[in-house]
Amino acid sequence: MDCVTAAGDAAIVYCAALRWRGLQAAMGSVLTACDGRVETRTSVSRFRLDASEEEIGVEYPALNVSGRWRADAGPVARNVYEAPAGSVEWNCVQPRSRVALRVDGREMSGLGYAECLTLTMPPWKLPMRELRWGRFVSETDSLAWIEWQGEHIERLCVLNGNECELRSVSESEVVADGATLRMEETMTLRDGRLADTILPGTPALKKMFPRSVFGAVERKWMSRGTLGRDGGSNPGNVIHEVVYWGR
Image (cartoon, rainbow, N blue to C red):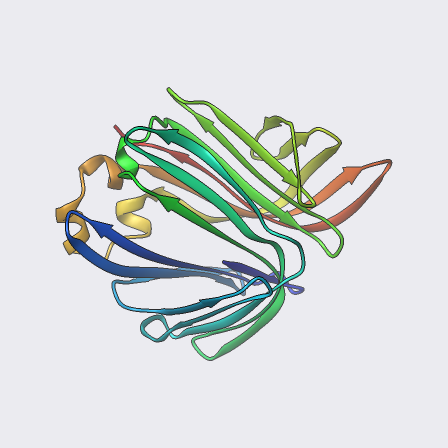
């Protein structure tokens, strides 16, 4: 779940529930980009998440995070991978949200986005070499995309709740059927191995999982975007990333 304010500050909140080999754990992290400074904190602890069709509420005491995401566009769900070993379901719960968030006592409000990934197989067994993901949100439009490269190739794009063909993706442009998103004024939110960025304070998890998980390299950005479609264009904010999966 994320939020970008009118002033350009941003927060991304991750909540995860893990059940694997008899182990159950809850963990999460919060990334903030405020006043030009980017920080990430991670915790292996419980959180409370309440979700309905209209609203998502999150309380994460260990991270000092609480917030509400109110849906401003309908959900979209699809299986992006399915095999005998398991599947990956992508549920774009809120392609566009109205958000009220509090992080470390700082009040934030603006437009946002929320999604849920459900994996029934270990992520290090996915036939993936490179993943590109992103979302654009404005007052009138929303665009979300996934490009999965490797043994399994998947391209998915959703524009204002309707699935459309994804033609090309780069760090500065996304071309879909009927729309072109151009990005500029890009700020780096994260650049490095997952072991060094998301999970530096979780030694217990590092012992449980293969090295390939933590060797994956993630590059995440926040940009100003302009979505052109039907002869017009409108500005909004973009959060996008590329992940190079380590083997």
